[in-house]
Length: 125
Image 1 (spheres, rainbow, N blue to C red):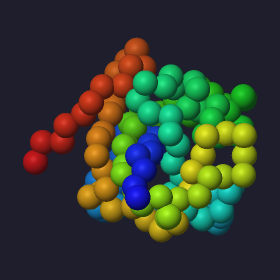
Image 2 (cartoon, helix red, strand yellow):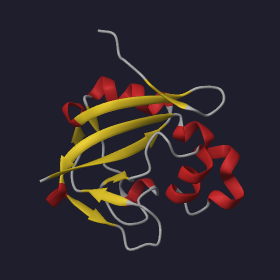
Image 3 (tube, helix red, strand yellow):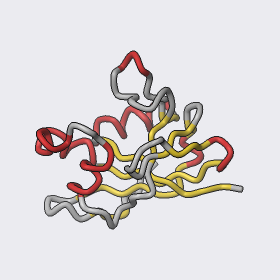
Image 4 (cartoon, helix red, strand yellow):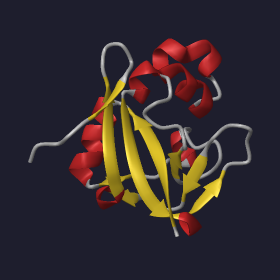
């Protein structure tokens, strides 16, 4: 059984993901893996405001919301196997995928415009 979830990132982060062909796992060593190693996902999709995503995804968002805006610029929709995903022990909407996620699992890409509205983005090959 598969599930659709979202990975929020910056434009630069998205370009790296696309170039490498995978979404890498966050690691404890990189200090952005509060709930352990894995690819961090959420059910909060393109219709969710930037602020809501920031407050959900980062526990230090209260004092750093303006510094995180670029990290929610691109929304990557993925379809992954449910058995590879666990829910974080948190009141926040956070899921952790064990192992990297290949770009072949991407089912949609959205980019926020200047007003913060997310619009479907198509990659031209």
